[in-house]
Image 1 (cartoon, helix red, strand yellow):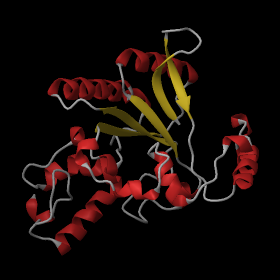
Image 2 (image 1 turned 90 degrees about the horizontal axis):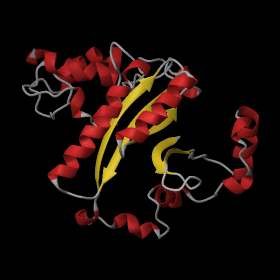
Image 3 (image 1 turned 45 degrees about the horizontal axis):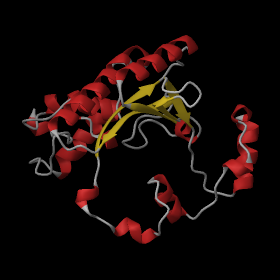
Image 4 (image 1 turned 90 degrees about the vertical axis):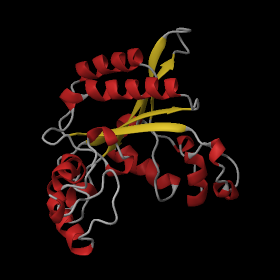
Length: 242
């Protein structure tokens, strides 16, 4: 579910919240309509709300492009946008009254929106220690904080970065704690950076990405790359780099 500040079509010019529910189902339209009719009748999904397509066409659809798959071969860097992403995990339901408060804060804050990705189901059945990805049972949904802009100037970067950081700060009471977990693929340097490759520096962000699996990953890293040759700002450290 995508939550964005928007301009009301009813009250012209007024700021409001726009909620968009998007999902991908690997199967036929009739199957997903029947499934959600049983499991989530409140959504009121109808077949005309569903669009069947091939997997490769779905990749184009997510990019809001109606062209052919050859479009995906266009690697022109001058057409790129600027983005900033942050993440959180919610483990207890957010009260409705607090959601109303949150919607107002999003409107006041500026451009950043939020994406709620539901967890549960199969995710709950896989043990936390089964793979490096630890965010499983106990998490209701993941939040992606998102802002995208086109102006390459430093002022635009500073303004958008400040707004998304503020939204992240406002969500502190409602998200996971000790650690405040994060999703690795968004590469949020705000939660910690390794300057020297030390274990102490790596643990700051490592436990947020991998929770209790962090130390196991450190042991693997130490075994296969003891000199810490393969590294970046948020890589797994080695035990020898304490």
